Length: 220
Picture 1 (cartoon, one colour):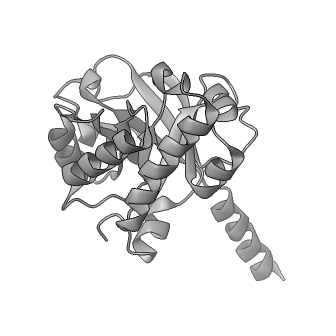
Picture 2 (cartoon, helix red, strand yellow):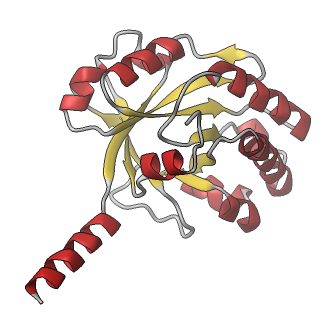
């Protein structure tokens, strides 16, 4: 009986496991010390690969290489500027070109926060994001959507949100997003060893590396 209780307790601990991480872009500069980030207790980093229809993040390659060398689990995101489905197709193709040959233990996200996209309305915003993610999924990538709580609730259909993993941003003591989500970006003013200035802080509620590697996605 005692052994069963221990096993059951361990099972629930696994179910309730969380993972601390950060996300970075050109704004953190070229000298992020990811080894210090790792020693500070961070498990993962999600790196901006680029934005729009033709711009690769200046420090993406450097950040990816150093994060991997430090032993961090890595994901990536693309900042959306597409105003229609055709433009989101171009962004998806450029994203895949940028990450070609690399391996990611965390999902690849479409960062939808540009207000020009939301002006297109809920249906179009949803179609733009859905198209982007569909293209990545067809190419064996684990893809998700990033946006703030308010934008996810007001500018995305429930059908689209249910199809993909969600990374939600809300700088508050709790996340009030009513739908399911797997990562919460809880602050934009975090302080972490190895990084000068502020950095976004994230909590993951899913063991993405195990899922992605077992399904042989994201380059695995």
